[in-house]
Image 1: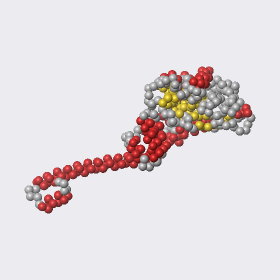
Image 2: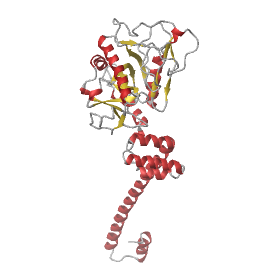
Image 3: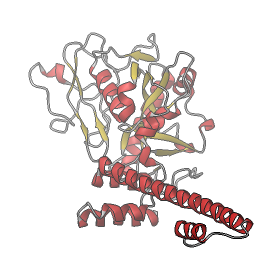
Image 4: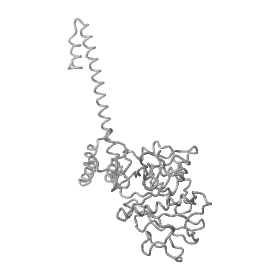
Length: 399
């Protein structure tokens, strides 16, 4: 299970100081920088140091944990007498990394979220160890099939409670989860958090899993697809540049997904927070058609920015990108402040126009009532005086 990383092929810089034995990585999945280094165990008395980074661009997580004092058992596994889950101390580097990544990924909801604990799946049982070894072997097989890149990532899954967590770890994912298993990227857990079922104590549980994505294909959100469209692909994604969902097909959910950590947390009621975080994820057409938005932005933004927005809008219409990706791109180019101002102005103008129409309609009704009353009064008078006739004519010349 354990093996030293080859000289010069590590994913992080070597820690300075200390002897050579105290600087060995606990466990490595592969030798590539786009692989996820899996930390299988940490001795309770060990001082662990994070020596990796969160790689940008490909949403890839790389851990390189170096333990400094204690030694690790030959198998690298927690002894069978221990529980399946080992609670990470709050001072543990992995606890801090996972908690920080989780909270940052929730956006505006993050500061209101309370992370109660982070547990690691120790894979202590015989079956769990067999699953782990099978996962590693499958990752190597997919890597050979996909030009050396198994595309192993971390991703979130929203559970239905503590019992669901235990069932998944003990027996795997069931087909009750649907034709596909939906996971959220490690830097965007909001979708999975929304799926978490809150317990009686107000606590929710989210699984951080290792996932063999292999070669991804673009799949429309809400699809009933349950198999890859061809043998060229291994899993699905809703967007290549800004993914919010990974889709693992039902026949692969228990071979390509390995639960690694469980995060227990509390969040406030979603109403208000979801609206703030995902205001732009809702269709904008009832308030402001997208072409109208582009026209309004063209008065403020540079021509090259408008050309980019128009290109992304065209790609969306041609189904080359998802709506979420289009919105994200527009937000990156224009900025939220400008978009809020433009949409707010559009809404206010529409409201003013509606009110003007209502006022005009009311005035016309009043005009007709007055006109009818004047004629009735005028008709009752057998001899209308010239002065009264002049008065009504001056006041309402169109009567």
